Amino acid sequence: MFNKFLYSLLIAISVIPGVKGQSDFPYELSLKPLVIQNLPGLHSYSYGQHQGTWLIIGGRKDGLHARQPFNAFPASMNNTDIYVIDPVAKQFWTASVNSLPTGIREQFQSTNMNFHQEGDTLYIIGGYAFSASANGHITFPYLSTVRVSEVINAIKNNQSIGSFIKQIQDTLFAVTGGHLKMIDNVFYLVGGHRFDGRYNPMNNPTFTQRYTNQIRKFTVNNSGSQLSFGNVTAITDPIHLHRRDYNLVPQIYPNGKQGLMISSGVFQVNADLPYLYPVDIFDSGYFPQPNFNQYLSNYHSAVLPLYDSVNNRMHTIFFGGMSQYYYQNGQLIQDNQVPFVRTISRVTRDANGQLTEYKLPVEMPSLKGSSAEFILNHAVPHYTNEVVKLHQITQDSVLVGYIYGGIQSTALNPFSNNQTNLTSADPGIYEVWLKKTQTIGQREEKLSGENPYQIEVYPNPFKKDFTFTFKAERPVDFRYYITNSKGQILLSSDKLHSYEGKNDIEVKGLSTTSKEELLLTVVFENRYYVVRKLLKK
Image (tube, rainbow, N blue to C red; front, side, top):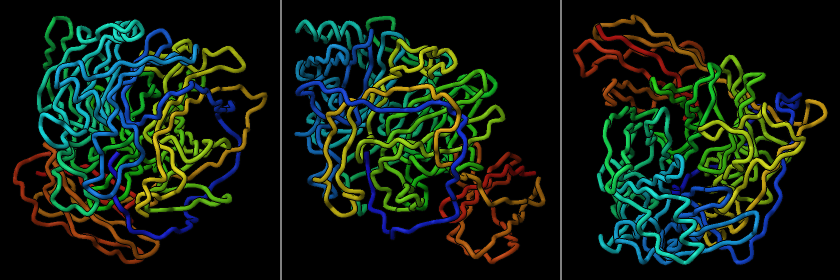
């Protein structure tokens, strides 16, 4: 997690009212603490599992990183052990990474790696940490594979693990803070950034940073003694894919196809604030959904996806973490410093594809959940992408999985107040239980995530110039961007100010003369995005 200091006041807003009503989710959610003696706290790690036993690699042992460059991400707080955890027997085992080759040893103690388990293989890409061989903090340019069952067995029996790990190097994999998933045997490395050097909240030159702005697609051959990869393609969008430290959630879409949903993330191109709208990803492409804003979860946290095939509803549960919005005494609060929150929320996609957000009546035990992971109980019916088959659960109450680790805090905004010592790596494990209710209607807060803005464009197709129009209920700030299919920003405006009522904005001077499809993105109030396709004659 890489935070920024956000200058803002704490304000209450009334434009997104919570409404109590009946639920389309007839379940009660509960968390039960599970204690494993002497288990350390970790966050921002990667994991795999085999027959209910977990393999934990990397992450950090401290809390939220400090503001001072000399004190941020100290190597002494790297996790230099690989953990095997049996949550049923309440036991754990460890093995040091120090016996492994340099590239593997250094990557396996990094933070915010991109990882995905397929079968018995855990794929790990990138990650950020101090590298002794590079004598500096870097994003590691590696793809590593781990045979999960073999490494678990070796660590339990105090045996060597090196023969069960492979690694390959390429700048394609120098990514931290993104996510790795698979659709139809193709890997998707989504978002993230390359960050080299010492973190600095004031953007002084102690680091270099470049967002990928991409969905990188490729295949991996893990069959031989040496890893290889191929079929590399990339989709680039410097506006809608400019994301890191977000949640990438497996989905079952209304047409029954598997896909992915980018949920929120940071930071907007011209504002140190989270994106609020999701992006859907299919094998056919990516599709921003700016007609819906998700308010209650904005950073990487533990997430639980569940699909109800009877009613064709896709539910995603978000556990705590950090959020620009939270409830206090029944009122929705906006805090642009994006504090730690206790909120457990749900986003549901109905059979028509419409998204709705709810605050659940249960909360996290304290300010925790950020950079934690939800680890599925594989005994629960689930799809190959680990979405729970809600319709096949026959028990009245079921253990759907666990939440382990993350960052816990005793203050809402320790980073902006230079009190990151109030945060720590959480050693806790929570069982996540789902219980059917007798009647639909557990009390929830329903949020209006609707986008109040619309734009019209004319002429479209256009030759040189065009105009876009919109109505505003009051004067607001806005910006616009024009991008092409190559992921280039052809034109971007400064901050503009609207009038109350109808606004006509003339756009001139595009730097392209070719016939192509372009995207116009207009951003209102640093909160609402509107996207329109343009056709250049």
